[in-house]
Each structure stands twice: as structure tokens, then as C-alpha cells.
Image (tube, rainbow, N blue to C red; front, side, top):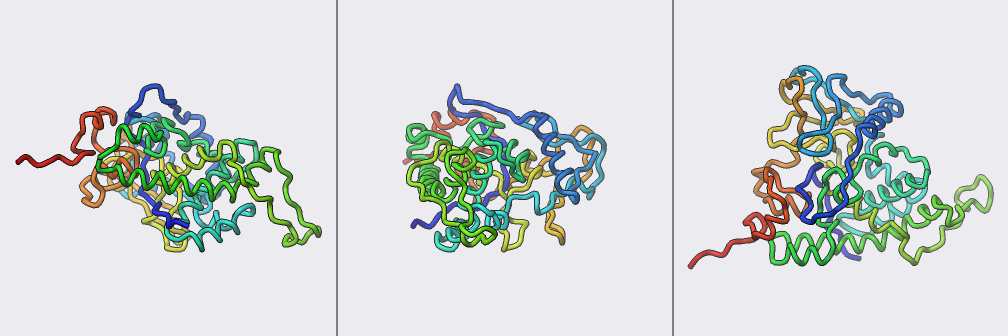
Length: 348
């Protein structure tokens, strides 16, 4: 089995416009974000969202967080409990596929946690679409599962022909193709792991029950899935995009690794961030004002320092789906052989 290269990435929400006209666009509604806030407040008593912020459409695209009044430096903006985040612990404790994910993580090598997170996220989403209750339902409804949703762009959404046409000989050609190859391999593995759960949710397979009542260990294993599950591949593609562009890992302990953090992952990017964040003793993610914020100002996170030498702009695009500080459309940059994407030959 290949060793997956997929790893955690800092959160990214917005992307450059799609390089192709006619792509589907979808924006999470204010009502869906209201449902997200209600879900946090009603499901997790320890969660907190300051009355001094609101979620509204952002000039940068999609939605963002804004100050409804002057906010002082150090003020708590929101706190998201660990239980509301999607973590490796949630994956391993999943009653449907936890054991299979654990085996995958133990055997697949580097990147297997990200692959398992993507598989779990896909299962929850597809079962949620079928009406099966998911702890994360309102959060899943706000995520960019398809190209163009909330302005999200990513090479994983591109067709093979588009990658060949626009990225051939570019600086991000190899990394983009490696990533796409690994996701293709992951699809075959995850199809077998979560396929039975999806088919049960759709009513296309009987749920396995214990041969001896009340003895869970007598439950027979689910039938092997040999054919691709309809819709699973595209949903898993979206799950990888969500994780690569939204997952956080730098603020968490080694046991949990990367995780998805509702609310924090929807803040737009600015190289001069408005917030700081860390985990408290209970594992909740606390987000505070980095400095004074004026009423009406949008609240920003910084996904990566724009001067980071280890993350040149072409890598921002191939990994996160956007180029910071550039307003020109991706298509134009690629067609013009911009130095962002293409190495310039030295003149003799």
C-alpha cells in the first residue's frame, strides 16, 4: 500500500474564482449558519459565542464574522468544545467503522489519519443526506463539498484534462498530480470501509445484528463491497478538499493531531490577523481578539504567513486552492504563464 502524503493544513476558506465558466456555485445561507450557532449552543452547553460578533456575507466572498460593537484586545470571541470538533478520536470511536479506521491507520503509514478523517467525514455526510441523524449535521451543511461552494477552488475538483491543460510544466504540476493520485487510491480503500454504512442508510442493505442478542461481538462482519458506491467518490473528493483547506493541527496535542473546528474554519484570511487561538485545559478551542476590533470590522484569521519561504504561492494554490493577495483569476494567471506558477528562464 502506498504511504499517503496527505497531511494537515492550516484553515483556508476562500479561493480564487474557478478558471472555467459555468461551474456550479453555491453559498451557505445565513439560515444555515444560524442553524450552526443553534447547534453549538443547544448541543454543547460549554460552547460560547460572543454577542459582539455576527456571521454575515463577506466582501471577500462567502460568509465571515463581524464585530457588532467595539471589542477589546483579549476578549473571548468564541469557544468551541472538543466534542464539537471532528477529530481522530471521533473517527476511532465511530460505532460503524471505528475498528476498520483503526486498522487502516495502523497499516497504511504516513497520512492515514487524514485519509481516515476524510472517510469518516464522507460517511457522516452521505448518511446525513439520507436523513440519518449525525452529531455534526448542521456543521456538515456549511462545508464546501463541491467545486464553487462558498467560492472553494481546488485541483482535486479539476478534471484530468483541465489539470493537463492548465498545470502542465508548472511549478505545482508534480505536487498536484501526486495529491490526485493518492486520493484516487484512497477512494478504493474508503469505498470498502464505509460502503456498507452508506448502503444501510440508503435502505439498500440490511444492517448487521448480533447472532446472539445483547452480545455485540457476535455481530457478523458486513458484506464486502466490490463495486463503487454511487456518489461516494465525489463526496470523498470534497472531504479531502475540506480537510486540506480547513483542518488545524498546530494547536492540538499529538494524540488528536488535526481536527476541524466549527466557526474558526470559516474566518477569512488576512496577513494581519484579528484573532489568536489555543486549546484550554478541557480541550476546547478558545478564540480571542488579538487587538482592539472596531464595530463593523470583519474578524480575520491568518492561514499562513504570506512571506513563508516554505509555502510559495504556487504551493498555496496546489494545497489550499488560492493565491493570497492576488485578485486576477486563476485562468488568466495560468494562461499568461505567470511567474507564480511557471519558472522563468534566465536570459543568456
